[in-house]
Image (cartoon, rainbow, N blue to C red):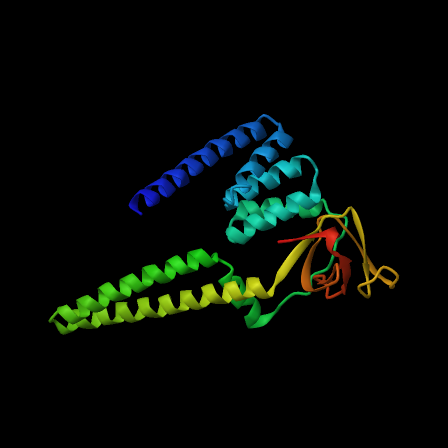
Length: 248
């Protein structure tokens, strides 16, 4: 059994090293303006089920250089899912979105919900989990010191520290699960078709609701027999053929 574990660890390390070399190779190709070859190399890494914000970001950059709007928006969005506070990703996503034909208004969220959502999205799910663990460790250490020390002043200090650490740990866990719930409840997709006629019903002979073009981000509401019901940021809804979009 132990030998199997060693073999698995060795294979994992070998695969990781290969992907690191492949990533460097892809970046070299990108810097040499060989964008198509760079994308092929990035795809090889993705085929091994290894994902990272930097991988998606660099792949998006290569698609952007080739004026591939849908692909660049899609992979910038994927990168942003893994690193929601990254300013470079947000900036480049803005450039890619400026290439889109569709300019759709956004219904702004207001009040406490907007502030709460902005704060939750400052960090990724994994980062909030790490914050929770670190705060819990601080809580345990401070509480142990609270029990051990004899002086009242020190006891009060460690009690306050432990209470604050516990509060932040619980808060971080809450934010992590809230963010995960938001991701599961809010499924988005990018339009990949050059032009897509969105219908009022999930059938080709129904009335046209509106027209969309590549690179537009839509919210997925439900699916039905090869069609997906979507909602735009301005509140408009309609049915689009599954083949015209790619879910994030």
